[in-house]
Amino acid sequence: MSKKSDPSVPNLINEKNLSYAWAKAFLFAKQNSGTEISPLIISISGFDQSGAPTEDLRLRAALDKALSAKNRRSIENVAFTIFPQRLWQIAQGDRNALFRMYMDAYPRYVARNKSGNSRGLYFQRLITQGPESTQGNQLEWILSQFEARAGVRDSMFQASIFDPSRDHTSTAQLQFPCLQHVSFDRTKKGLVLNSFYATQKLFSKAYGNYLGLSQLGAFMAHEMGIQLARVNVFIGVEKLDEYPKSDPVYDPLVEIANEAVKESK
Image (tube, rainbow, N blue to C red; front, side):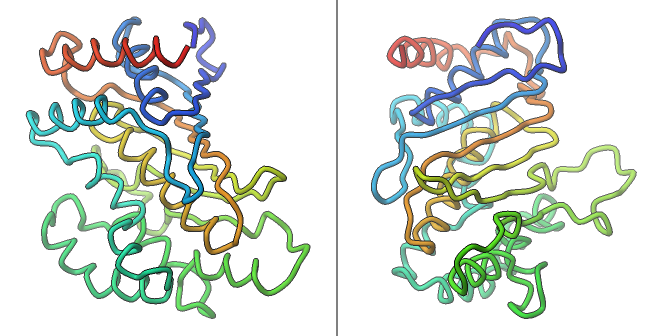
């Protein structure tokens, strides 16, 4: 990814390894002027038969260590806000059990972080603000339409997190929702998940977001009986976070990210 002089031209990172995609975005923000990339498109392929993304576990562990040092959420914790992978494993392929378990536990998730979760969580909004026919579950509605008939228009396969009635507010700092929308596109190579963020925090949230979206895509692909082929993430403004570029917490990440980028070539 090269430095763009025109801020209206997207910066594109196309990788077969989720960790390498994050590493390239991180190094770009760290090494160029300013602390933002705008706009940024992350495109990730490289999923196994179960839909799990290819990762560099050394880089992931180093980032988790840095996040812990700043008392920020772990990568897995951030990913869980988008898709509850642990509950899906417990549900053993029963999506109704997944939805039920999640909503039963949802009050506890909010209670654990009342300030951060009071406005909701991404997966909660995906399964509680859709058509009445599926009790507000947008994902269930998409899957029911996919299963019911062939030739259905792909524009049906989209779900919204942003709710103008709740989210158009003059509050100066709004932690949620940064992820606004997801859509699912059937292609000859498999399912493609597309997502849009108005803003995203690169250090504290981006890796977990990429992982959670990949897990959501794998779940939908599994229920559709197809493979997950790609996850595309469009970010209006990617921010390095509030820490200065000189913060020592970044130092080990720069070293490992550089090694990862070399391997990606």
